[in-house]
Length: 264
Image (cartoon, rainbow, N blue to C red; front, side, top):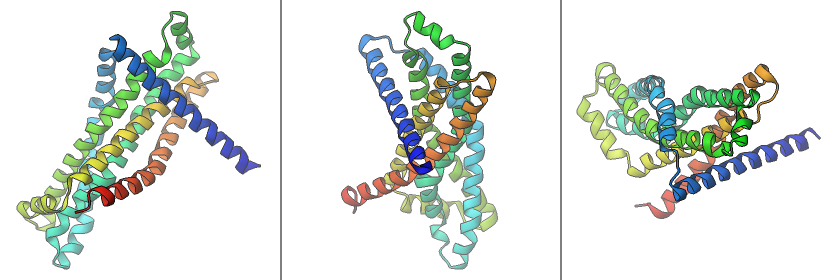
């Protein structure tokens, strides 16, 4: 019975998230068609979501690139394979670590913020007030946050890759004993465009998940201040779980696509 109940709850959650996603797409197209798409609201959300996240993402990317070089560099140097250090680190960052770590950082910072903000609006009946003024809450509140998360995760993933390679190069030169030319040449020879594009595509999907889950948790908040706290925590936990689970299927799909259509 417990498994049946968990399965039912998961199906209901997945269905609710899918409905909210489709509503967001509908109101996006409706706003573009009617010329009333809230560009200013979107830019505000992109600034809050993306620009304000740069410091945390920079620290995460720099430290990850540096640690990867430390872990890999010594072993590869002992095996005489130091010319592969940059390539291996860059592929690991581009394919998996950059989108996943960026998604987790943004989920913790932005997903919780969205859930808390919308949850407070739900508890104080501000969302109901929007409906009485003939303003659709999904159009006004969800769409800019959804697209802000989606677009900024794409750019933040690029930023994480760049900062990670800078951190890796500094450690490679000063601690492992590689030359900067060797490190950069290894990246250029081994990192492929499909590796970068696959990671950036993951960033888009993770951003969409964070935006939709944060908004959903905010819209379904109940129980006053305690409910806001539960929604905030639930948004972060659920977003991270979805990111890690969906990443597997994205990895398999991207690898199969590359093997079928881009194999040299």
